[in-house]
Image (cartoon, rainbow, N blue to C red; front, side, top):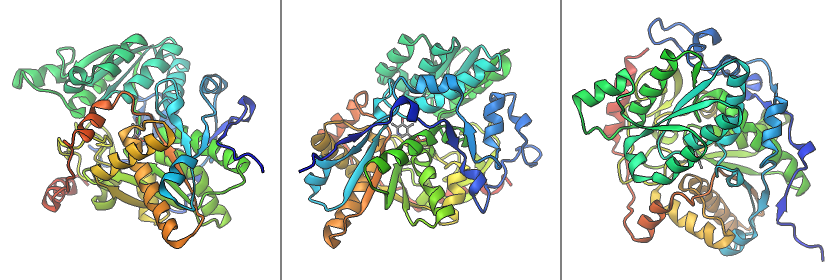
Length: 455
Ligand SMILES: *Cc1c(COP(=O)(O)O)cnc(C)c1O
């Protein structure tokens, strides 16, 4: 009998040479981002003061379906790519399902998540354009970690504003960023006008993504040759992440299968879009009927319970107005939520695709999320990031349906990262300290009401 193959790899030469820009193939293009002051559609030049120029152009490119991956970026991708496509035999057995479950293992990147795929690209373009310093905000630290390493590789200085409470309570990602040579500042800090203002009003402010974004954007705007970078939500970030799905497409072919269902967890949409869009192009162009499922936490349900409306991309109100599914930019998930994916809105491409029913969304409660993560760890050996466990939980739901119907569906999900630096969340789950939480409808309505006046 032929040995059952567990993992599929590409050679370095087979790593894709272009990213896929789904905007070019969409029948209904995303609506344009708007300048909040004038309400005029933005042009790439409007983004130059904050983002590097190439990323600004990629952000608004609705024409070119394929964008060349620069050779320097491909060289660095080769440090950890291709990532393995894995047949989850262990999970299939644990579930007793006839479904064929595959996952793309992005946790093998040096920083432990998919975020490096875009950090390398952004740092490269910055370097090429003569930028010397990059800055960003980070909560738990996954994006800050990826950017710190990518900046170092290209000889850029990285300044990361980390939400103060995370800086103090989750020290290991801070240590990792510092090991890569980044300057990590707990936010709010006295190093910016925005930070000083907050601390003068409230000396014990523990920080939030909003305070950290305000500080990072201010630094970028006031420092020569310094650009701001983002690890999710923006179209150019998702573009860079399509390397995941493009590799997976080739690897699924090696396995002799094509997915009936593709699943990704959903924060701002970059890892979901990264695995989904390359397969979605075959739905749009070649009549395939794959289902695409974004899995979000029930405690931050922008896709399943949010409204499609223009809103700010950040809590501080610095970004352009973006047409997206949103819970309102003031929305903050409850403190008992431990699974990440806390962002209030969805990227504009995914928002349009959901509106046009080219994809679906499900919300997952936190106990089901951690139960799925623990089951996966026992069955496959990898401790998943709590974020990724939302995708695992959605895959398990679909696999269980197959157990009932006897169908051998092919399910592919993205394992966006490992959870080895998130063990506090697992500790809380194992100790029985986590509960489910449903966001009250009034809270969502109240936050969305505030957004309605923006445009
Ligand atoms: C940041 C992160 C996410 C969420 O971001 P997306 O842009 O929605 O992908 C998911 N998983 C991991 C491991 C992350 O670090």
